[in-house]
Image (cartoon, rainbow, N blue to C red; front, side, top):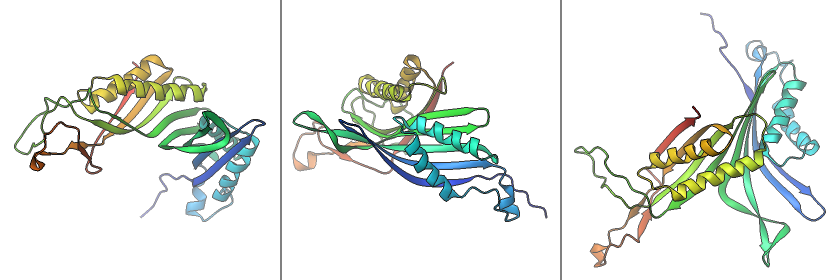
Length: 280
């Protein structure tokens, strides 16, 4: 029986990078976790135990730190572009390099209403993401956001769905709607003003969620993606929105009126709604 190596890739995951750019008047903080994946002419390492062409994953980790020192960055996409370019240009065996970046967001603290020059606080669980993939001739940048937790207490309902003998969910035109948005999108061009456009996509997503008269999570998801595609330089967007259920508590056993002001938050099970929207 013959065996063929059908595909392979390798790299370094979970590389933690914290940078402090020390300006005269204030410091800039970045907190990023990276994963590097390489594909190329590495088959001999698997089939022949030949390590002569294998770039050590420890070298990849060190490259992240050295390159960050040589190329200070404001946007994770720019650092991903610099890192993939270095890997493809430096190592002839590398056919393609893929870098995934997750940025923990920090906010500048205020003292007496004035932004502090070197004190920060974590901005919740929200993370900025990017994936940069480069081969010798092409580069692809996908930006994103994870765990953007939002809730609206009005203008949300769910009615008109099929019912059978196992359906117990009641229809409602007034419910709490909460989710943790995960969005990834591809710009119309590979090189853009990444930081400004990322902030604009986030703003449009939040504003549309807040203002939309929602008949379902699917309905609002589509409206959010459509608003991004129609107003910004984005070619494609994928949205994943888990339904974070908040169930009204029945207060009648306690002799109290149900005014739908008391809810219990549940974590599992939950609905998960996803879709990809593309121009054209």
